[in-house]
Amino acid sequence: MKQAKPQVRDPEATKLRILAAATQEFAKFGLGGARVDHIAARAKSNKRMLYHYFGNKDALFAITVENAYSQFREQEAALQLDSLDPVTAIRRLVSFIWDYFIKHPEFITLVNSENLHKAKHLKASKRNTDMSRKFVARMQALLSRGEASGVFRHGLDPVQVNISVAAIAYYYLTNRFTGSIIFERDLMAKDALADRLTFNTSTVLRMVCTAEEIARLEKNGGLA
Amino acid sequence: MKQAKPQVRDPEATKLRILAAATQEFAKFGLGGARVDHIAARAKSNKRMLYHYFGNKDALFAITVENAYSQFREQEAALQLDSLDPVTAIRRLVSFIWDYFIKHPEFITLVNSENLHKAKHLKASKRNTDMSRKFVARMQALLSRGEASGVFRHGLDPVQVNISVAAIAYYYLTNRFTGSIIFERDLMAKDALADRLTFNTSTVLRMVCTAEEIARLEKNGGLA
DNA sequence: CCTATAAATAACCAAATAGTTATTTGTTGG
DNA sequence: CCAACAAATAACTATTTGGTTATTTATAGG
Image 1 (cartoon, rainbow over the protein chains, first blue to last red):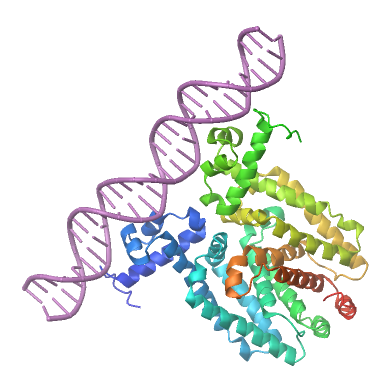
Image 2: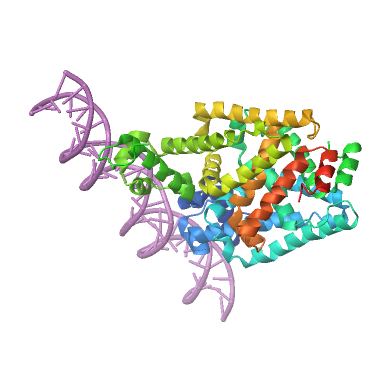
């Protein structure tokens, strides 16, 4: 990180500033609502540099999205769930995803925007394919371990579980504004967030565990 | 429905055509990406009429979103879940939401767009408040009935359940494009959709039922 | 039948927008 | 030390955008 003295010329730093600014702008307004001028200004750079380093608005968006996924997968992989017993690993994963989405609201908005555009930017990403396969493999391994030790149901589809684990956190947070109005309750209040994490952990454990394991967990307060 | 003969002048019909066109355009491109000219053209009307009837782009978006919620709640209320036994009612609700989201992809995109704008349009809607309260009350009643008959857990929060039921359907569908790439599987294939509905039904029943009821349902194939 | 009203159309406008051109200025290898 | 190169800036442009003005035309009440 040679960021200490503000060099007059630093292409790497400029690129990173533009990418960071793009992430914020695209997250706030979506691809359609984002303004190239705003991004250049926010990066304390200018449009010419943006076009020089990234080509055009769409290409910049593509890199922004790829980058967001990459950081998320990287942190998830770092959890090393394979060193934990299956039930603890599930708790840890649900908790991590919850915290990550809260800490990185831009991730959610970028994914929404990318889907509005039918994922045409992500489709072109080679990096993404590699990351995704490892990601699915990790869940597959976790479910197999749980099944082998008799606590998880057999025949669980890792894709369905992955989608569901993300869904119950993602939906709550991406729709926190309409949700807070519809349910007349501040969904982002500290207590509300804690309650939701508890509920989500319970939901996922009930989803993957055998009936006997659920009964056992209920008895010793493991599903409160 | 006086839609039979195409009257030369018909303000109601024009308004409806503009609203329908706005729904499509906003759903496809979001509020930021939507173009007022496109909406006017798609409605086979013109911008002057659009501004005359709806004020401006934001006001038109507000009505579009309110309208989308209204239609969804209306259909859900028509299910009359209170006439079904609790477990059947849950199955019916999960299935309805799934089908509705598939049939009305514009609903999902509009909600996403409204949340990108922090729900400022919905906030102003009085109609929405009434609908929402009834909506929460219906779930509350269903959970109470299930608890009373001993099949549902006690102390379930209807808001958490409502959010979760929507989440597992909504997330899968809104992120179907990135999802199909990440999981290298066509999430919208007929079989995939059927599998997901089965999985979601199982997830919600496991979420709301007591451990004993889950064991019972598993035994007689009620959770396949 | 005719006139006040409102529905409809098209041409228009100022501001904003993605992308470029022209120019200056710092950096680095020979 | 200096030329070639690349980083940075600002001014510019063609087009698009949300919103308006001016005008025409159908319709309903007296």
